[in-house]
Length: 205
Image 1 (spheres, rainbow, N blue to C red):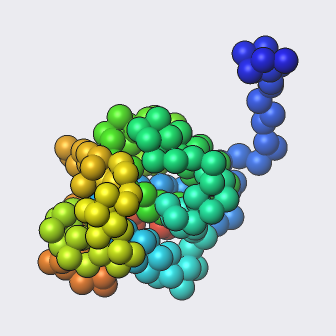
Image 2: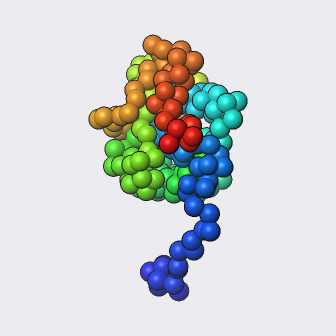
């Protein structure tokens, strides 16, 4: 049976629990904070620091990290433009499901293409999508090179590496722009918390 015929046989099964009931239970509204930026910009560091702050404050949340996801869900994908698009599509669908469960989702992906991030916004829904550009410069990221990837890319050992042999398209109008070479982890985290504060207290709605 081909994919088109299979799709015709699928029927969406509705939950007996409403979105509002989940919001009341968790005392929060779901949101996806979509971090985009170059390798080494500080996305993962910020994502997991924010997650810890939210958990400590009693909020149900989860980080979807680029490297972690490629260990399992997206282990079959490479880094061609087509594979990157599929990587982002899958992550957006997972984030959407997590949001449907009432969770706050923090994503940490290079997601270099504007069209892919626009697709993610469409899948997740604009009301729950907040794009954050980790705008640390290429020069600073390459100077840090925490995984040694830029050195390998410069030596031709890694192909299609964002910023070196593959493009990065920065957001035109992100909800927030953070440069980790100019601001501390704590300062950046405070700004992200301020951005999603309206989602953190359901009793205010």
